[in-house]
Structures are given as C-alpha cells and as structure tokens.
Image (cartoon, rainbow, N blue to C red; front, side, top):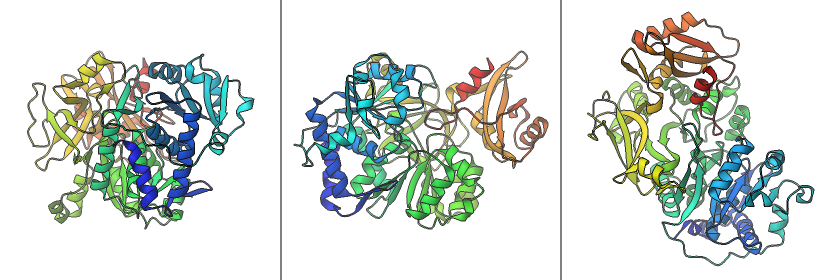
Length: 518
C-alpha cells in the first residue's frame, strides 16, 4: 500500500477527533477527509492523472496538508516550493520537475507574475483570492473547486513502495538545487519509525511551526494522521504567537529549527505562558549549541530530543533519546547526551567512516563521515543519475557530515565537510567554536567561517548577533573563546551583524556569509 492508506484509516478510527486547527478553522478527521476527497475528485475532474507533478507555493495552512493527502490518493508527485526563493529559482524548479500545475496562495501573486511561461504557470489553483482577477490562461479557485466536487472517497489506486510521492528541492547551499525523490515506501517507513521512536498516539497535539515545504516538519503530516493526533498550524513563525499557542492548544510535541528555539528561549515573555502540556520538544534541521539546549529544558520543563537528518533520508537519521541506563546518570551527564546529535534512528543503519571506509574509533574523538542506508533513504535525484551515483555508493548514502561516535553509539556532528576550516595545517570544526560563542552572555546568534589568510591559509572568523541592549567588543569575544578553546581554534576576527543570513527553511546560510565577503 502507498500513502493513500493513512487518511482513510484515521477517518475510520477517529472520525470525531479534532484533526486540524488552523487559525479559526477547526476540523474533525471526518471533515478533513471530506475536504481531501473533494480536492482529489476536483483535481481528477480537471485532468490530473497519476505520475504528474503538482507544485504548491503556500505558507503553512490546512490547504497544505489537504494537498499532501490529495496528491497521495491520486498518485501525483507533489513538489513543495520554498516561497522565499526568487522567481528565477522557482522557475528552475518548475522546469526541472516538469510540474504541470500549481496550487498558489494569493499572497504570492506578484512572485508568480514574474515567472516565465511554463506549463505550471498556465494552470494555477489559487487560494485566498478571486482567480478571475489573475492573468492566467487556466485559473481556478481552490474553494470553488472543492465546492463543485464530490466528498465521496475516490477509488483507491494501487501504489507501490517504489512509486515517487514527493520531490523536495535542496536549498542550494552547495550549488544548483537538486530534486530529491522520496517514494511512498520512504515516507511510510519514516512515519512508522517516528510513531515508534516518539510514541506518538491519538493524545498528541502536533505543532506545525517550521515550514511545510521543508522536511523538518512535513514528515509529521503522515505520522500524526496515522496515529490520530491533532495538527495545529501557524502560517509563519512568530516567537510570541508560538509560545502562546503552545498554552492555548495544549501542544504536546513539536520539532523546531534551532534558530526558532533560540529566539523563543531568549524572548522577554518566555516565562509568561504555561507549557505543562508539552511532553517533548525537538530541534532539527541544523546543529544546536549545548547552551541553547540547557535553556530550552529550563524554559519548557519538558523532555528534549535533538534530531539530525537530511532531505535525502525522509529526514531523521538520529535522535538523542536516552537509553534506559543513561537516565540513571547525574543530570549534567544526561544533558551531555541530550545535546549530542544522537543515536541512529530505528529505520536506518548508520556508520561513521574514515577516508578509507573504515569505522572510526568509538572514542568521541576520531572524526569521520556519516554514511547511512535504510528504507527511508532516497533512491536518488530527479533526472540526475550521475549525482545519484556520487552520493550513493555500494548502497550507502554519503552525507558529507563529519562526526565522532562514542562508546554508547551516540553520534556528534562536528561540521559539514565543506565548512571545515584548515588553519596553519590544523583542522578547526566550526560547530565547536560556535558552541563556545553561544555560551557568551551577550551573544544571541553566531556562525563561524573560514576566510583566506596570507599567513595561515585560512583564519577563523566569527559572525555574531548580539542580544538587544547588550555590548561586547571583538577582543572580549576572542578572549572569551581562548579561555575555552585552543588558541588556533579561536576566532582571529569577529564581525558584528544585525542578523545572520538564512535559507528559506530558517537555517543559517554560511555560504551567504562567505559570498558577501568575497
């Protein structure tokens, strides 16, 4: 069975359970399923057929979740679009994917108008607006399409594990974006793995805060529905709104990007709300500093799990869930494990290997590259067989992430291969330096990069954002780092910024820092 088995099961088992909260919109699973069936039947009525690519350009909304499920029921390949991309970047994705239509939020009309003529731009389904006012050959209103379509469940089609369900385009931080193919088998296996690992059930209220075009959050679409949990959606991230809704909607579990969590725990009203409903809060999408982990646990008084994954792996590869005997350790040592990247996810096999392909020593010191295989790993990149061969060798996906592993099997990422700094012949891992910078009481955010240096080859440079109302000098920060790190690892230069550049998913964009200095 494909992903089209999930929603019918939830609608059958939990018809009167609340499935969706999106602003003023509240729906039971019965009501949510009826809207998905209407969308599925409506898309069929305007000519969509199995295997076609359907793109969506939209903020977080119940529409997004409806589209994920409708695409699954028709055997369409969904192409979630990062709405922060430029029209040129969006056009490249639409052309590469061969998308034949788009579902678009009216707020992005100006961006769509700047797209060149493509099949997808000639057939658009608009939400939150009158499509007759839009210059497009075949415009359609989303709600109008649903209103004229049947709410009966469409005939089930046979989908196999190898059928492609989604095309996620990488953020492009390493060059041209690549379309990552995720199959029905990939997504199903990952959903079941998260249900088992996180003990997700019909008592859970999941908070969709990270963007649904990104896998830091999108995986929960299927796992939470399968278990009969409730989806709570916000269109975009605002720290105080998120803190307030945790209280109001009694959120039990969510996964947030570290930059979001950092802004939340440093918000002046963080102590003003009740977080007693939270049983676990997770971070994913980028490394997180141990100091931020401590602040998260202090602020929310819930369990904390660090996650690590990739678009190519659906996404989770590790979770910092403590083994039973580790819970008997003193709290400081437990916190040390919680702040690590984590042990391997239930659905994957993970190794850390040296340049010769040998496993590194389990000493937490020898650095190697993470490689993985399993049912959640992509079969490859869309229309890029050579790129696929480079990434997947002998059945193992080479992640490009450098890490160490300890005797307990817990991994800790030290850097991306491309971000490692070589200064005076010594390797410096940017994550290690950033973790120290986050310990500084005046620093809100930090990113470390290598910049050319005539004497050392490269030198360590810190780019920092100070907390509001705080002051620190370059020399003070350098001296602080030298008190916690070897001198060669400490920054030789500090640049103060009002904000760090970010990718569309909210990760700190180090390539943008490097390019701006060239």
